[in-house]
Length: 236
Ligand SMILES: Nc1ncnc2c1ncn2[C@@H]1O[C@H](COP(=O)(O)OP(=O)(O)OP(=O)(O)O)[C@@H](O)[C@H]1O
Ligand SMILES: [Mg+2]
Image 1 (cartoon, protein in one colour):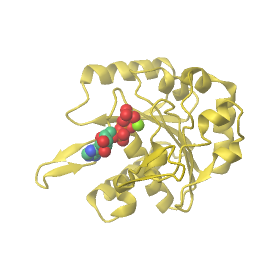
Image 2 (cartoon, helix red, strand yellow; image 1 turned 90 degrees about the vertical axis):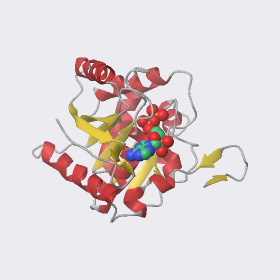
Image 3 (cartoon, helix red, strand yellow; image 1 turned 120 degrees about the vertical axis):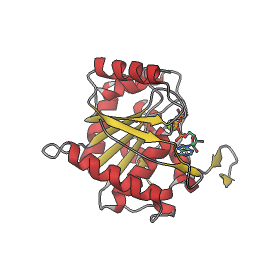
């Protein structure tokens, strides 16, 4: 499924079908996300985690898809959630919610628009999105700025949870920069895809940046009996 906006300036290929938590709440995938939701609340009972960054070692492990599904699962549990798409190089979150990518994070960071304009309704009650915005020439510098910290503080003030999408750790420095500014980091690992060596390297870079690594979400775990892919998770 895909559609164009009226001006035809931006192709909006939807990834909404991948929101299985929304489309098929009784599925094993939705149940797996509910388990991850519960586990997250157990990790830090005294100081609830509010800002959580999602990343991975390599591209295409499922960061964006896992984040969007977990965000919807959190909202279904009564939480107010803001998604910030800080993958300024390969913006994706707006596609899950069939939104445009105009007026996003890079535009707030550059001062073109204010925070309130960048924060948009997704159409799902309790879930708002700051999409990535126009692709800037200097994503790492923008994400390292004090303005980014201000945006995180404003998002914290308006939501129970703030989920942040980022590029892969080993590709560019963006995720490592942001990991030190958030309460916790989740590493998405694709089953049969992620090389252990790369995963360890990514972990080392995050630890050196004083990231609080909450754990790993194992994605793309093949369920042979059902002959299809299934989300699975563990923490450690
Ligand atoms: N559990 C899964 N089973 C099957 N396919 C999946 C699963 N999770 C993600 N995918 C597919 O893998 C691809 C990458 O997913 P996604 O964009 O969420 O990953 P990403 O880690 O955010 O990628 P990038 O590094 O480009 O930001 C997409 O085509 C998506 O449909
Ligand atoms: Mg992504």
